Length: 305
Image (cartoon, helix red, strand yellow):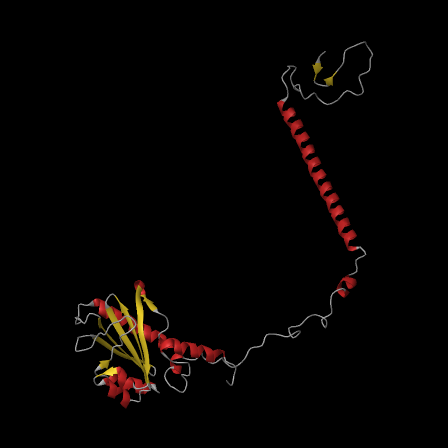
């Protein structure tokens, strides 16, 4: 076989016609100008580029076709959904009409009084005047129990108690006339003792707070100690004792404290001072408790009572 410039020729029996299906194009794997066996690289490149272009256009065409098919399917689904038997007018008619919807005015609502409630009563108001201080009053209400426990577990035993309407009889020195001149109604006394120290407290009762305050300011002399119920006589016969004076509401209260042995009290005797302060504080609390109890009762009482 030989290859010439005019294209391929086929050997064989003489007069045989060439194969009609054979390509008439130059063989891309051989050079057009040379009989050598070297491939034609330019022709190969052109053929490869042509095949790549055909494949690219096929991919593009396929993608466009697929997109068109999907779009048609979606459009069909939308049309089908819109052509269902659901009637918008029926859906709207199933909702309650505006007249049947609940409104804010339906049903009872909370009501608020436009008038502010009165402030709670002040406990001190009830113990500042005999007109309002109506709770029972006596030694058993002011000084209940058989012992008194204060801070740090200081326990005091209760001794004798006493109530008298003769105010000077419960005093020593000038205190009697002071109480009487300011309208003292009664004096209630109680004695407490601990570790050889005894204290008597006396509460002088007046009609008004002003009278009690005036008696406090004018106080002189002192309260008479109250022995008994296991407590011997103390703070009598000129022995030095510690005394206090105070007032709260319509009550003036006094203390006298010292040693049951009769020894004089000095400033270094802290036990006597502590005992006197404890008993005075307890008395103040009891008076305030009276006011608090009556104020609470007034706050919860029905109107008009």
